[in-house]
Length: 287
Image (tube, rainbow, N blue to C red):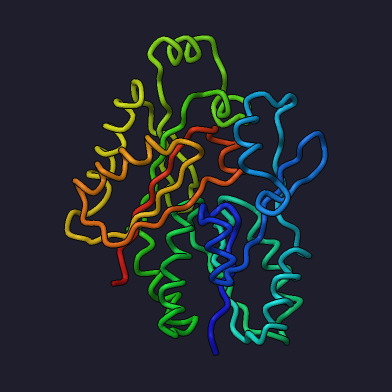
């Protein structure tokens, strides 16, 4: 029986790809003027992301509910799936995993649901889903897919560049202060972050301007990935195609890339790191 894949909307894989490949997703919610909107199906990304800097009050976020997860699992059952694999964000990073856990308990006598704690989030989680999808296409079982994901988890790496500190200040990711505000403005600092196993997004400083930020991004990729491994690359941006194009070119210069997947930074991720940001994720290729 073919495995049904389920993940989170924040995985940075496009809605079009997920739906084309019948990969279901739990949607995070943005609270705009105290009204909840699911980030992929109820928000127009093209209009929302450019408007972020003008929103006052700034939106807050909420999680998918257990009922949302239950609806997905029940739909998979109706479609004839006996085996369901949810590749979720680590509970150490977000409580959304618990929504899937509650729903799975209600389905325990109806389907074989495996809840896989990826330990990752965002684009790193997206690369785990992409790898699982490749194995699903080969007819692999849940056990075989999970074994492979466990084997590559330590070698999945995501790094990104934010356009500035505004969204980071508004979401409380960084405490606003006069000093950092002045320095960031004068030097045109671009915050740089990476996604670490069971830690989520971790700031690793900043680069001076786009050129300095890109140089630091490549330096970190060289230091934290293996030159002897062939990788797949997931590129995602929030209306920053030129920066993404430059990053792709430089990454291909320093690492052997087999497959390139083009994703999107979804609204909840852009909410945190800002519009005009980019993220790149590398994972060992299956091919």
